Length: 355
Image (cartoon, rainbow, N blue to C red):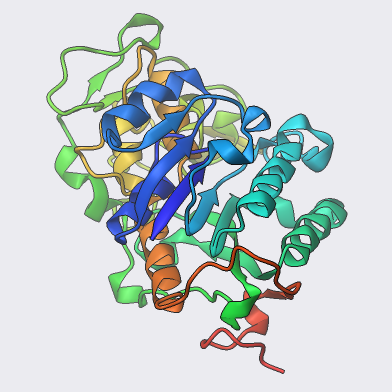
């Protein structure tokens, strides 16, 4: 099946779908710091570099599916959480506009957990209602990527719609069992000792043993030191964020020591062990393969690309479930009846409402 990707970023979602045998034929990404990375890793995919606001339906090829993660900062608990009042939050409706015009067989949208906050309920209800009125059976819920083979705790809202004639809803695949959940040791232990610091000003370091295996240098803010930033080798990573300043610390360091309310320090005598995860280590934790090369002049852009991405393995298992659900189905480009909306918990494993 052919797919068009929006807010493509460094291509985590796109690569997951590609690995699940979807053909990502066209992608849209407005951030110029990402273009070279995307084109390096997806040379056969047409990259549209405009804002989605300027993309018309006729610019998008005929596809079976549309996938994307509209900008999440507007909904993030770590940010201002302005939601739909923020211009970035309003881009969600541009995604709805193009789905309405192209009528793909399915769509997927990914966003941060903050979109579920009660203050955003009217906006989320409006978005979901728009999708269902377009003729899609819509299901949504909060999933932790760690439950699906990703070595980090990363909770994200997934919204999937199938054209109503399909007669079922998307439900998540079965989580991996606890014994098979990935931890930091699985992801990055072989990289330890091969890292290099970024150059002054956090510019890219050309003297690398492994592509992108450089880490941000510089001090740690009072906010950073307000809580522990170290997970051990046998734990999943903290969420990889879209900023190097707040990147987790490497697991070879002892956990930080609480010395006062919201105040921690590095363990005495072990200060030299505390460094931020490298760009490549962050990419490994986001389950990007090592041949996925991130191109940048400042490591700040490397961390941003990776932190904003959907973990590849997570994307792949979602895509595989969609492919299984839609096997043999064809896109209806005509009129079709409005769909319904359910949370994942309201559906049985076959994709039908429990009641």
